[in-house]
Amino acid sequence: MHILIVNNTRIPVKYYGGTERLIWGLGKELVKLGHKVTYLVNKGSSSDFASVIYINYEIAIIDQIPEDIDLVHFHFTPADLKFCKKPYIITIHGNYYNDNEFDKNVVFLSKNHANRYNSDSFVHNGLDWDDYSNPNFTIKRSGFHFLAKASWSVKNLKGAIDIIKKTKTEQLNVLGGRRLSERVLKMGPSYVFSTKVNFKGMVGGLEKENYLNRSKGLIFPVLWHEPFGLALIESLYFGCPVFGTPYGSLKEIINDDVGFLSNKTDELANAILKSEQFSPQTCHEYAYEIFNSKNMTLQYLNRYEKVIQGNTLNKSNPMNKLDQNNEQLTLI
Image (cartoon, helix red, strand yellow):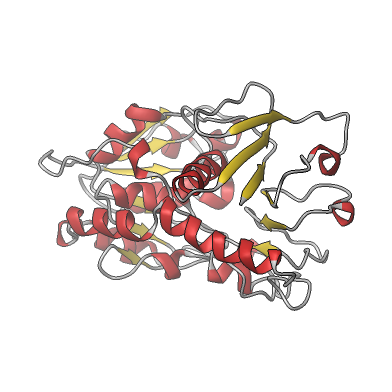
């Protein structure tokens, strides 16, 4: 099968980029399984295992699909999709709060993500762990980490700091934002300049991995329905249990062996004080064995075959069926 993977970014990614890591791992696994892969991505991209075509933004995406393609895997919804002559699927990577209908061949990132749009079509994300260094479980761990865009209010850096402040001695490394960004400054000086909080900026690659490999756990008190959360599985891979809110995919991904979920600050603070009860090895093995790019690819291949046979992934067009106002989600 010749598969075209389409995304409006550049690959490979060196430091940041969730979708880029996913489509890179997906393409590598497809090639290992005997398929041919072509990427239609932004200028400057390259690949040593697949062909690469640069998107021409002066021409419709649909008109840039090569004739010898058997299936197209979009990672955004292109304009004029109705004119696509090839079988296709679309992975939905985010949350949408309007009443627009999705295409019948969409795939969401988790069961919760799909159900919120009246769908049961989902594939869990998986990463190519060969792209990461091996965790070292002999290293002494100290402090916790927050891994997300610090300026994005739904990721709730303020809540993570509140949890740390409830403890006497623990500290928090903030990975993923500038200390003095406008939105972070709005939290106030007691948060931004706390001696218990260390802003490390937008770290990536080995630098990020070193922080995770020395952390006691991820504090992830999101205030939205997380579609999946790559920070969860990256942290678990490096032996870090997850302490977060029970929203979106978290109840689906985080079980009692690898983390603790609550919407109460006191309960989360008490849980992190007992972080040693979680085995770093167990956390690592869970992420490594379940959330890897091969498992993800096999699931996608199942969807590819279904649409090539003329079937759709959803019986009806998915659309927002619930009030998904994030203000309803709290950390108290």
